[in-house]
Amino acid sequence: MHEHQLFMKEKESIDDLVDQGYKITGIKEDLSGAHVHFDYIDHDNRSVKTQILHVLSADARKYFTTLLFAKEKRFN
Image 1 (cartoon, rainbow, N blue to C red):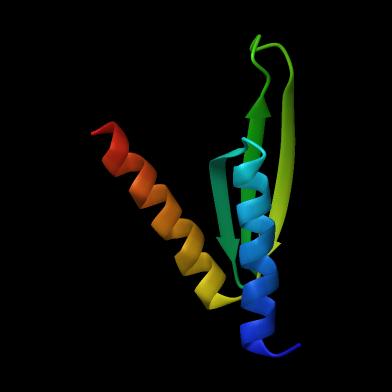
Image 2: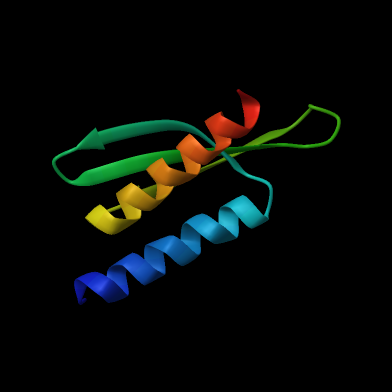
């Protein structure tokens, strides 16, 4: 898959999870890319759902990092 196509697919997956209310709660990077942990807590704080997205493209790694920094700026 072409690098740009991979980025667009990964960006769409990240955006879908964020749109569903998932928050990035952890990142583990290694030589095979980044494993981004997304958690969703329901309105009663009872159930936690976790999704792990394996991000391969450098552009998608930059994208989720930008999302994290934007979130931090909103709360500071």
